Image 1: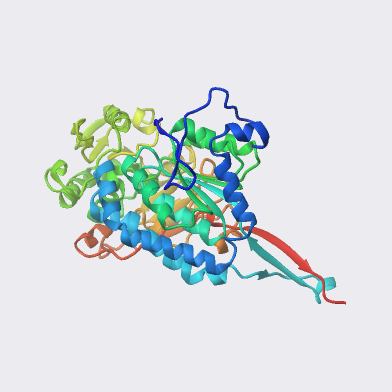
Image 2: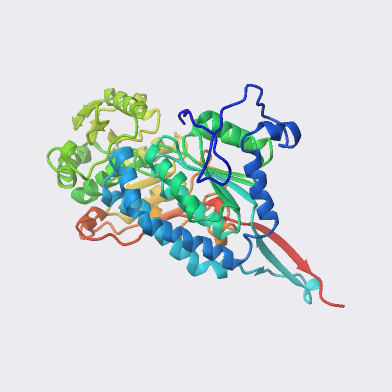
Amino acid sequence: METSSVSPQPLGSAAMKAPEEESDGGGGKESMDGDAASRNPYAGLVNHLRTSWLSRKTWPMQYRVAQLEALGRFLEEKEEEILEATTLDMGKPHFETQLSEIFVCRSELNHTLNNLSTWMKDEHVEKNWAMQLDSAFIRKDPYGVVLIIGPWNYPINLLLVPLIGAIAAGNCVVVKPSEVSKNAERLMAETLPKYLDKDCFAVVTAGVEGTTRLLENKFDYIFYTGSPSVGRVVMTAAAKHLTPVTLELGGKNPCYVSDSCDVRNVARRVAWGRFFNAGQTCVAPDYVLCSLETREQLLPALREAIAEFYGPNPQESSSFARIIGDGQFQRVRALLSSGRVAMGGQTDAGTRYIAPTVLVDVQQDDPVMKEEIFGPILPILTVKSVDDAIAFINARERPLAIYVFSSCKQVVNQVLERTSSGGFCGNDTLMHFTLTSLPFGGIERLGPLPRPLHLRHLLAPAGHRAAWERPGSPQQAPLPALRAAAPAAAPLRHPAAAAPQLRPALTPAAQ
């Protein structure tokens, strides 16, 4: 996060901004009662939302539906403003914004509205012989007051999709957009409160200090998307109140390309997944593992795919985004020193442009292999076999996603069975991410739950792994072929903040 200087606004205004920090403002107490609460600039807001939740205003299905429908009107009426804001923040092409921000939210809304009544029903469970005349069921209660902290790379999608789930589950919500994507943050702060009930939902804009103060308050669930370093801060703050947390963090997602594949199809699908949103996607393939022979075939195919998607000079293409800020630009540009640039490598600090770049001769200890790239750079490392690729993957932190390309189903299954990751996708990239029926999440650094989660998914064990595979035949066209047509709404994922508490209940039979 970056610090920002903001001034206070009253609770009834469009959004709650971070007031000036008090020199004696402390944290780390078990509760926000008394003097501590009076010193915290957000205590009144959180207490107001908690009072609304305790009144059970958000619990009826009719109320939840009304708020979700209002969110739908926001997406419809503010579509042009959303397109403009994401373009101003990071040069995001309108096609990418429509596909990855607007349509996924609309699809999530439709899916939620169509299924909410079913998800809210009590779930009756098996009974033992002594309780056959009784009623045993699980009731799905809201958590209470939920905090959602959104990221800058998908500032609409990754803020509103968790909000949709949280509203559907009957929670009151504080949403905190990223201050890095300034125009999207301003849009959310100024317009979203006009559509939602201000007694139950609030938008807070803040930088580092303001967010730190916000986290001092007791929430009933925190949903954070962003970097591991800030994720640790969020989890530490939540631990003081024993607040459950879902962290959607980053990672390095490997992509193994076997010798038995259609190289042209692989190049188009990998290039699309890697360079979509200028590589600033948490589930993008981070590096490629393949044999030396396959690499030599893949390089010209990648060059062809990049030219097909972005033209001979991607800097002039309206279909290629920019890096979000100067700090990120400097960080990503420094990674170009790793290995050897096989194609791309051009940069322009003035417009924060980094060309779609492929690196070869990369070593395992090069800087580009030590952190999530989060930019339009694709390193290719060579391995001798699928066994070597599996060993390479397993020697590192378990990733958010693993990608495999092979015409041999046995190879795909071998990687699936011998590795561990949050998600798995065979013969394509990113597509597993679009299915509402699959959980989304990771292992270790990516939160205590697998982040599938509409109401019906909370019972899924944390070890569930989403897997999606496309046939390896060359007849299958990658998603970029849809660019010329209007993209269909693509459902996304189900946030853990959406999930209600599950309350077991046993009702004795009437005597």
